[in-house]
Image (cartoon, rainbow, N blue to C red):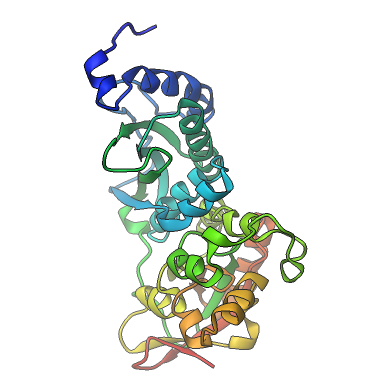
Length: 346
């Protein structure tokens, strides 16, 4: 047991012994994420990882960082903290996979008003579950107490991940052409974007988050909103082994209108057929409760589509089969056309 303790620091609001206890509680979760390449234990000054670059001619590292945003407010109101870490991992690794890279490792950062070791361990438990779903290792992190800057019960969570891809296998849009097909990978819900609007629409601080809601299939609003962001790494990696993918978009803040165009070259656009998009009930409820236009909904939320993938028309059936075999009920939502508008929803 670490004997370090500062009475003066504790009087200022920082209990360093709580940090030691947090680490001890989270170790069993972190150990579950270990993958070949991990070269260090948690607690050092840096996380060490030796990547396997066998068969790669020009390995390229791809990095991503993100947070969970104000979805954390729902976790705090529900006093449920064991899934929010999945969201944090998802927001990073789902971006990395858009380049075709396999995530290697992850690091997290938790800032809190007061370190409650059991709660910190629950947060990290979720991070570890996300890492397992993504096939990467949690090799380090940091928990910082911010007394006087944050309320005692408050915290923020951010993460960082690095992946690797052979340069020749990086997904770009150079081969995309009119006639290619846009495939949707379903989301699990709101994921981790647009929660400032969600919180306003439902007035979550004053709402009954635990009452069953008929329009949500009997689930409560809180349970529905806390549903973790889906991690698409493993099914997409399986697809990349067999199909030439021309573009991938992670549908996050900005919805369809901001994210799908990011993977499309100039002179082309995505024509999305609105009737083919399988909108989840939570989005209908948000639109109804908030009086939000369909255009704004598609420009804010994922609307039930967490990721879009572009493949050649002749590869679409094979791609759908591979994705289904790997747990994704993927379906076609549109096509690539010659257009100066990067996206059209009709």
